[in-house]
Length: 199
Image 1: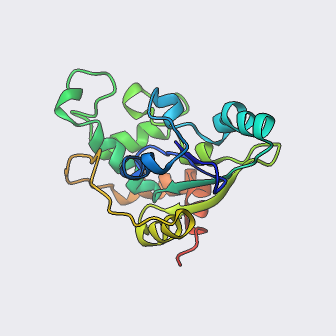
Image 2: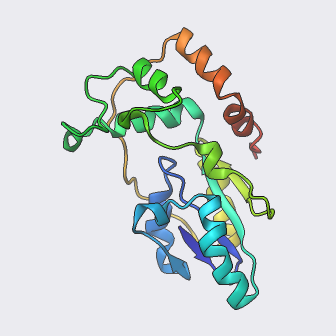
Image 3: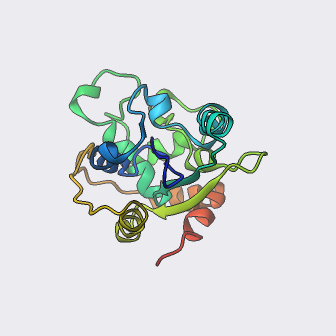
């Protein structure tokens, strides 16, 4: 998570949406940088609202606009699936070795997910809170140009982003039947993603 106090902007770090590269480049420019523990680095809106927002609101009488990146839902799961196939994950209950992508997606659709499919929810991460706290600026991972342009203008910086935290390049295929079931069950995720402005 990055907070730019003067610009009244908090950049929330949704896992598997390329935000680590932005954090690396923008950390020196930010007023607050949270890199650890992961539960705070990747704090969703509800955690920001409970712990970070009161700090700025109560002490500084300041309200931040929230920025986040969302990835196309199947691509997001694909990235998690590939990320959990890193050699260092072998033998870990969270690894996806010996699991097909179909099996991974089907496991993700269960009410009680096995450890290898427990990767959170983009919709839950971005969920607006009862007090109105929610994402002000939502960007698609697949449209980096729009995100970079916004940040460069808002923060008066020029960005040159490194590739970081990249998942292994493994071919991933989802069968039409499983994809159809996934799209039906997570229709809200797709609707939110499709609502993100393109330009």
